[in-house]
Length: 253
Image 1 (cartoon, rainbow, N blue to C red):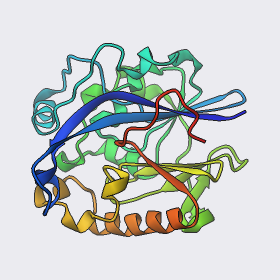
Image 2 (image 1 turned 90 degrees about the horizontal axis):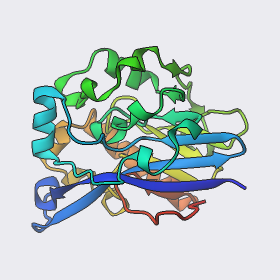
Image 3 (image 1 turned 135 degrees about the vertical axis):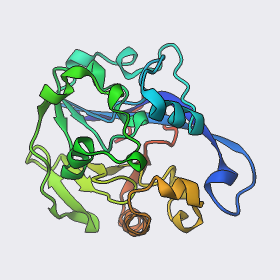
Image 4 (image 1 turned 120 degrees about the vertical axis):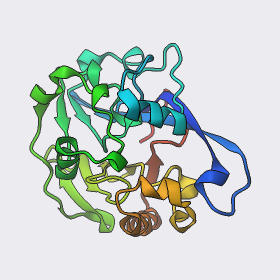
């Protein structure tokens, strides 16, 4: 039997009035989510959450922590919640710190990166929000699968079949970051990463304020992706976002 499990690997918080126009001032907590898919011998981890403290990520790391202060308590890192040696594949939706912080724990896994993510890693811009010092020294020599080639898929999505059996489709979800990836699990659940900061915020992209909009790779494309996801949801898919809080220890399939 297959299983999809959520892990909260640290968290941050943000004043919603500074994120969205027309929102009252309140601080909202956003977990840094990772999802583990188990099927047969496969153990596929979607993102890795925050790195353990302390961070040594230079001036860019200091600026990031000022804007989105991470909180990583005892037992929060992904390595404390599962056995890293059991993971066969790690899919990185994109390269923001709350998604790559646990990469260091998986030297034996095969990594899945989109072409856009690879290009960002090679030549990051300041607004890409990439803290390269969070990646381990061995990452350049890590096993990385060929980048996905997307084609027309179910529910109006552009997909690439990771294993060739339809169980795990990588999904092209551009806008938030260059090469941003999602994953369609068994044609039932769509891991939507940071296509929105939460399900209740999907479709509210026009209300995002100027400063947080600057860190998006392409705000116009992000709105198009949001409409595509809303249509997929109407078509019967469940959408799970990385910064929503999901039941821990429960099969989400």
